[in-house]
Length: 549
Ligand code: NOJ
Ligand code: CA
Image 1 (tube, rainbow, N blue to C red):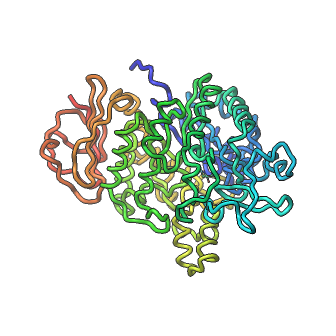
Image 2 (cartoon, rainbow, N blue to C red):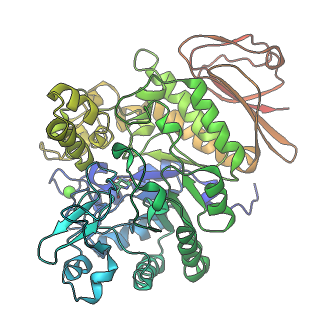
């Protein structure tokens, strides 16, 4: 098949969370040489791009999303030589590497911030320092990790802004020097052959004003002053003109609370090639984020269809390092677990856009049973626990429940490679997070590689099918009208057409009359005997991809 479609539209992306992927030197922490050792696995899986979560030098208070030197690699993960080697070896196997770009904030241990703590330093203006209002912070904004978004420096008697933890001070994007510095970082990696960036919370970087916010404290009060402002769009457009347009690369935005008009603007103005929206992963969250809601397949469908039909290209994902594992949320936790994992995989790969896989998703990794939020390694979970328990005096079990909902350790367990000691992740017993006990029950790469019916082998088929079908790659997305948890949509490209049917519930469901006799060939199904030519019902989690005649 000949195509001019750029690589980032053709290939699946695989997110590697370096700390949890594979440990090469027995310290219980994943590292770059570990990733290199598993590149053949990724090539065999069929993905074309790795998104590497941060491996830059960092105190790792937010596990790498707090960078103290953008131009070096953290010793936990290796050296710059190792990194160069990774890019080279990946390239040899036809895999590109996308880095994580975290420039809303740095670590407070970054030399820029250390310098900026001196009031007369040239670096003072790299960050957002302000006088307080009496003894109080400059405004009422709250951090995305809960608590006030400002911290006081007794030496200079001013406050600095941090939308995340106080060890993650926000950069001041009003200062042209910050833009210059970031452009240098981008060129440094692009010149090494890196294929682009996944840009962390990139729609929040420009603070238009520092007036008080109106929202609720627990939802990041103040967002209306910094979310997707014109200045934000201007900066992204400048980065495109100055840097990205000169390279063959991809720019992926992590865009919390993005709405359709801003999404369209990001894409049409070449600010981003694609972006992550969060509506569908919030489907089972109360807006307060304090408790979970029951999953509704119908609502899920509505959200996905909304994005599919409103923007030209989506970054499609079910999970990542900030979200609990998806099958437990959107599929079945019980006997139909594997079946529902496959159904969700098919959904993710048949939507229009680039499909993302978070490490472990391809073997159906699950959240860890019974984590104690108080012992979490996740700064946001700990901070939510503290606020709930210490500031709001909620009893421990309630505080734990609320914080547990946000415990990102859940999805960050070491990847289970085999059924042996430490799940084959490390030779060290004391892995940085425990391995999942179900690595002994077939939820590991080695066992699943050998089982033709495994989730892993299903992913492999799916990846290849998508790559070979122009209608799935570039075709239009045309939803058909269906009720409840039944999905039906067509993907059409010139005279080629696929139909996708999915029952995302644990009960059988009736097909509408117009879908009962479909003329086509089954490319893939979660059941072996799906027969679209004569079908009145879909069974639980039955998903069928049909190439129409
Ligand atoms: C989004 C990242 O995905 C998350 O892990 C991180 O904590 C925040 N941004 C802050 O950088
Ligand atoms: Ca290691």
